[in-house]
Every structure is written in C-alpha cells, then in structure tokens.
Length: 126
View 1 (cartoon, helix red, strand yellow):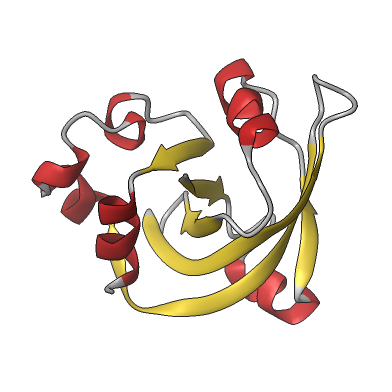
View 2 (spheres, rainbow, N blue to C red; view 1 turned 45 degrees about the vertical axis):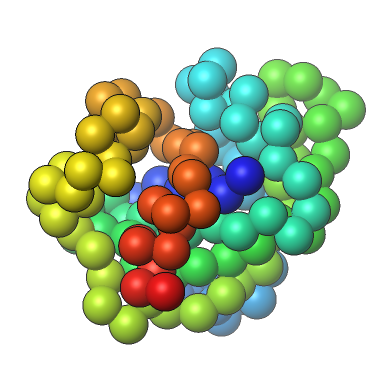
C-alpha cells in the first residue's frame, strides 16, 4: 500500500524532511488516520502533501519503521525521498478520475490517506 501524508508547510514542510533526512511522523489524532499509520510497513511509498495555501503533492518519502506498541499514538519513522518535479495541485487531483472515490477527495480533513499504485505513480509523475 502507498500513502499520502498531509502537512502544513509552516509547521513541518517537505524541505524540513529533506534537511533532516528522516523524522517520526506524529501529531495525528483522527482515528482513521491513526489506523492507516498503524497499518504501514517498512519500505512502503509515501507522498508528502502540503496543505494550507499550497494544497499540492510536493515530495516523496518512504517508511523506515513502525512502532505501534501504543495503539493511540503509533510512531512511524519515515525518510525523505525526492521532490516531485511538477507538484500536483488539489484541483488537478479532484479533476482526475483516478481519485473519484479516494478519501483524499471525499474526506478532505483526513491527514493520512491510502493510495493505489496508480494514484501514487500519477502524483509523482512516474
């Protein structure tokens, strides 16, 4: 499974992740989003999405490890990947048929969203 992680760039941006090389993805409280974090496995692919003014998929990352010993606050360690050459905006995502049934479009406040391989490839421009 691939996932999209939303972040407010003024709080923690993809540039911050690139600089730090790796981080623990935390601060997620929505039960559905926490469930997705718990289900992650090492090496799974991630898309980093900036919320706020940007509203676009801006970079990639991957899961290093998942510590789900505390079911309410799983600790997912991720490492930076690459910037997306042409970031995909929310309006482009909403307009694409691949995302018609996606929680990204249907549940706008969800901060961790599962992606199909086809959705991931389209977002990163593969």
